[in-house]
Amino acid sequence: MYPEKANRMLIVKQVMILVSKISLILLIVLSGLIISVNKFFPNFVDKYKIVFENILYPVTEIFGSAEKSVDGAAHAVGNILYANTIAGQKKELERENYKARLELYLMQQEMAALKKKLNFIPQYSNNFYTARIVSRTPGPIVNAAYIKSPDIDKIEKDNVVLNEDGLVGQIESISGGIASVIMLTDKRSSIPVKSKNFGKRAILVGTGGNYPRLDYITSTNKLSVGEEILTSGDGGIFPADIPVGYVKDMDKGQVTIETYVDWSALDYVFILK
Amino acid sequence: MYLFLNKFYQLVPIVLSSLLILISAANDGTLIHYSFSPAIAAICVFYWVFTYPDLIGSLTVFFVGLISDVVFIQPLGMDSFALLVAYLLTSNQREDVIKYGFFVVWGFFAYFLFIFFAVKMMISYIYLSDIFFDFDIIVQYMFTFLIYPVVHRLLGLIRFKKIISLRI
Image (cartoon, rainbow over all chains, first blue to last red; front, top):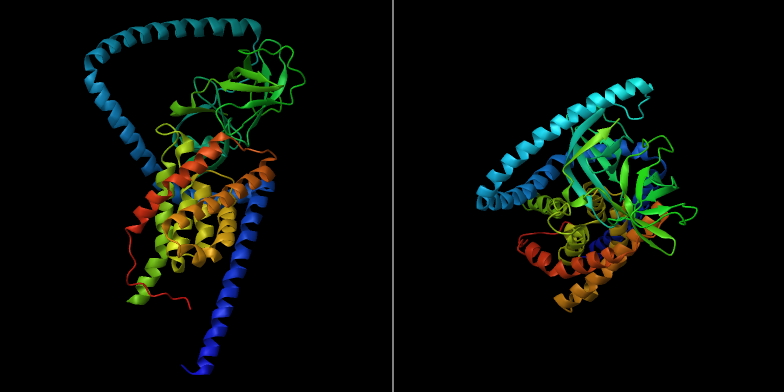
């Protein structure tokens, strides 16, 4: 090789290395900027995040349904093995279901009459929508989920998400046909709550694990293990008196909460508007 | 033809990494506890950097991180920042490490993973104003470290014998 050509190649190589190093630094800065914008201007990032989510969502759903199929197949095999028992249980459940529906009807009638007498002002709106959880990412840093609902266009950011057991979390963002939910165990979650018996106010903060904790609690004197925790309604986002969980442990002023929601069996949720 | 193959091969890391991230996200914590789901983005990036460095650049690392952030519903930029920092601090030591064989590379992966998790914890501290260090993180770190040889072996089934590097 001619010395001139070799020199030229060496210079090009050095320039390429320099460009690659600069681009790496620039990308680190860009990632840092994205994090900062995400923190301080979440609505701005959401617009672009939605594009990504819409591309990835169908694939996520395929893998999610594959996992559910494996789970379903295992259940199906189990069900075949216990077919007789299931048939017996079905009849019993049908009887219980009929009884429960009758009781519900009578209670609704009674409640309507009482509300009329009291001129009751409702604190919950009647607008709630059902949604299915299509993908979840429970982990030490985030506890969030994607949900799908036919009424997705009626759901808004910060709407309350709950199931039959209690509070689940709140809507973070909505795109195309899906919405992301921040669970109350997520580190980003903070919910105003109160104790049921003494109305002691606190903020329920997600820890990333299964047990959120109470922050900003003035004193734990009147609080005891097993005390029920409800939403306080302060701040106006979460309606009051939604069951959250109960005090699991009180150690050195740190109060941990056992949630009513069973995080391992979360399939369907309601969105309260 | 070779030019086309090169272009195709350079897409392989991002496509395979995305696929593995999506598979890993299918575990919603009901089948296996979430601590036992490895940080697959970190495994993929480390594998490509140490096995086929010509196929992976900082832009690929950035996009793998972004995909991981979106799939795992994390604050956007968290994984890409952590991966890029780990990539910056380890990629130039590749030549020194790789000559000692697989076990040293695996040991070095622990260092890469440590940087990745440490940066993530740091971002989490800044982002959430709270330290999230707990036992689950250690379990996830250990599990990711232990599962690396399996993923390495699986990804190793893909051979690029005809590749011609476009880089000088």
